[in-house]
Picture 1: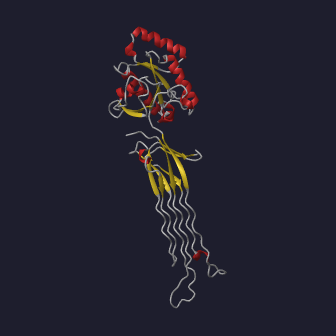
Picture 2: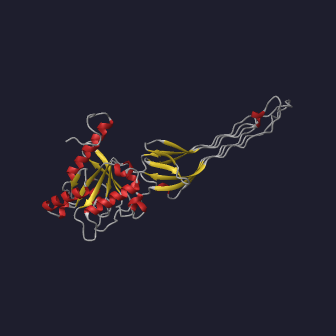
Picture 3: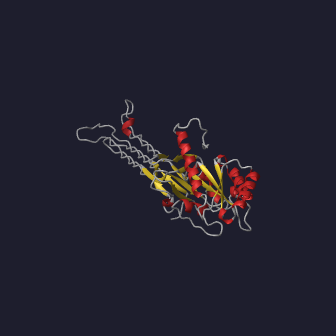
Length: 354
């Protein structure tokens, strides 16, 4: 199934029902007076988060939604029935904004959370409500107000614990295949990943975390080049970024230092505080060189980049070093949970104990 992460829909709330103009007509009651009832309120439109959905693919074919109109009032002071509200299910992690102005409306981050996106029209007033000592036979009424109509831009923000970064062919898809049940396409050419992939990494028992792989970044991504920029926003909610680098690139591919600097530049230009997130450098494809060559290249790369974060060396193909990286990830994520719950108050947030 194709991953759909952005869509624009149109929603329309119901109009309020018109108020009635009516006069009581009964035998032996010549002056019954006004008895026109009010109309019903129009139905409103709500979005509700559903954990059973993981894409916006349901909106590919149906993009217009309308709630019921309120019914008009009637004689004998009968109030019209209000229109039923319309509830639209969306995946957990959906960000909603106005499709015309880009103004943020809200986010749905928990299962069952509801968001009002179009309010129904107010009911019309019947003539019975206008009766007074000086207006015995009123013919005034109101038709009911119009319900809200608007265009909505829905954007799915993947809720992952760990996000993968890197240039095309850095081995991100191979890595997520190695550590989870996700099966993204893997080939010996760049741009095999065309949409985000999610995988669940299990550590035994109840321990697990979600990892997200997005298409590789190319130079100029912040200006719209390539595919990865369209999905970088998904990483804004991750708690840790793994920056994968091909430590032994083939001819024609950027050097490890150039690849890291390019991605770092695009993160800075893209914004959304991605550059401030905790980011670990993961040197991939170490199976293609000797231990001595690896140690020399790693030392030179760290010095050239003045890298202050953690550094790991792995082979996503053979699995070498992967287990140590996964255990470090579990340790880091556990420490964040402990900090949030007030455990380990003497430890700085995001810092691993030795």
